[in-house]
Length: 344
Ligand code: NAP
Ligand code: ZN
Image (cartoon, rainbow, N blue to C red):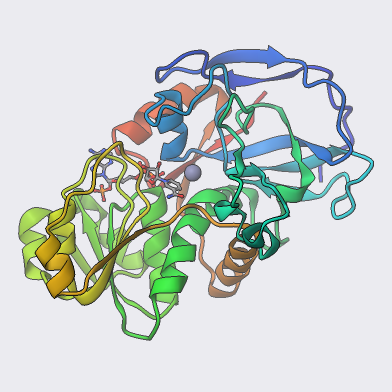
């Protein structure tokens, strides 16, 4: 555990100042610590494609300036007077959700990702996420990281991990369920591991032929590339999970399903879903989406990953090289998650 350094009065990191890919050095005063908040001395951040969608304002919800980073690991450096479940020095993770109403049925059952009043995102609305030396946020959504899990491996589980674990757990109802994962990136390579651990027969669908050996190592027993590859498995899959960050042919993805199968979309390109009514109705196919996970899924996922030995495959880069790291993700060259290590 790092020493008890004083929390500085100014926090500094890398902010998106306006719409675009580049982030720049940024400093601000967080003000007085509120009773339910903690300050985290940030050590690691997974670089999720959502951080890139947000700096580009792809979804029209970004407010500038903001500091990206929502797969955050660090140590509690200070805590407000009402924080009971954490101590200074605890190693914690922080993810996409910063706050919620705490009163609706979904919050009450730990499904704050579906808060009926709408949750607050860590980096939406001008929020200051993990790409900084210290981060302030409500303690309620900080998760203790189990001792056996190193900080590099823990970071990507906090967004990518829970985002694929939660729907796979709902959709894999029996051993041998045939699951295809489309897009073997940060989310996709974890989806292969979780699906295999949940007892599925797993196919990886990729645009990158060089990912085959690793996809098989992650748990895929089948690996297909492009239209031709998909034809070979047409009409055979119970579940298809789409983790692609760019535009998709959803009709072609529906064609992979058996009757009664489900296409689950977690990838978030700016796109429209257009599929044929006849395929949906006559074959009783379903389309669903899934958004991160609440505290309940998060706790369960961290435990499941620990028991099954599921870990992301990461490359580390210093936070000061975050702009280079973003270019690498955009070029689809990351294998499979870049974790930014704080070097400030
Ligand atoms: P990523 O690491 O960049 O992986 C995306 C993968 O999509 C790539 O590795 C690539 O896999 C595939 N791909 C196909 N065509 C591509 C193209 N033209 N450009 C880039 N990639 C392409 O991204 P990620 O962090 O896993 O995130 C994936 C998506 O999920 C993003 O849209 C992100 O915003 C979204 N997301 C959603 C949630 C949620 O709660 N629903 C949570 C987190 C992230 P192959 O090489 O195998 O083809
Ligand atoms: Zn994310």
